[in-house]
Amino acid sequence: MRIGGAAVEHEPVPEPWATRRACIHVDGAVRLAARGELPPQPSGDLVQAGPLLVRDGRSLADGEDREGFSAGAAQFDSDITAERHPRCALGIGEDELLAVCCDGRRTGVDAGLDLAELARLLISCGARDAINLDGGGSATLVRALLNRPYSDRDQPAPESRPVVTALLFA
Image (cartoon, rainbow, N blue to C red):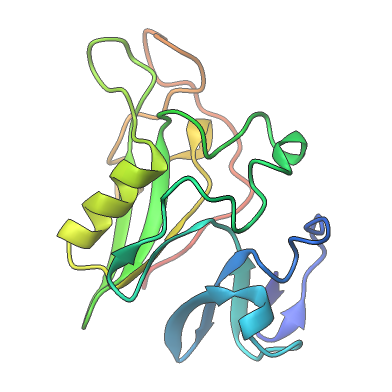
């Protein structure tokens, strides 16, 4: 993670995945790329996330573990590439930035999306590149609260929880 070009303390991505994991790099323009495709000390802001879902208008959500999310599932609560979950993603279209957030975990109401479904949704909205962001109970889109985040299955009402990272669109 970098803010204004300066490194920020963060949990490092384990090898060999550190250079393969996708990033959002903002330095005037927004770019989505593997960390290894960017300079070692890039200017601007950088958040490593992933996996990359769409590149050049084509889905990368084909079950291949290019960025080590399945292999490194112990770093997370579960394998984030498996099953349907609440999801957040960022896409870049020809002339627009797309922010997507989907709810999940309420039986008969919303099931969430798997990564292939999320990639197809972003492509249908015009994304030429897209990246998965933090999901699950962190999947929140705010202007006023625009979705209903659930941190466990079938809760009667949203349960707030701290979210440690955020993207601000101004």
